[in-house]
Length: 63
Image (tube, rainbow, N blue to C red; front, side, top):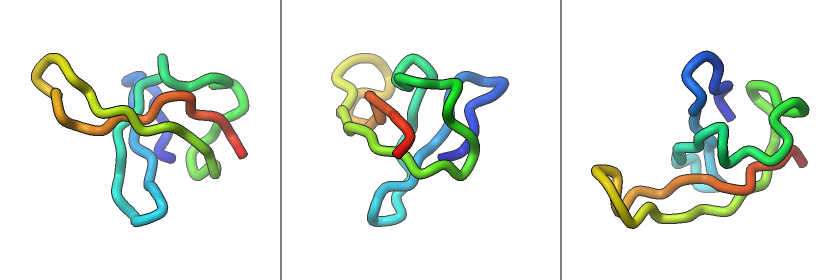
């Protein structure tokens, strides 16, 4: 994962090397994470707004 500070968002590489957006609100234990940490997450496809159809990580936790 790339660290979200100071913007509140970052990107996580999935098993295929694709970078998926995440917002700090989708992180369950923010204090335990750091850039480069191995994490698990759920991918949700956004359905509203200008990013509709784009994937986003939710439920992000450190492994």
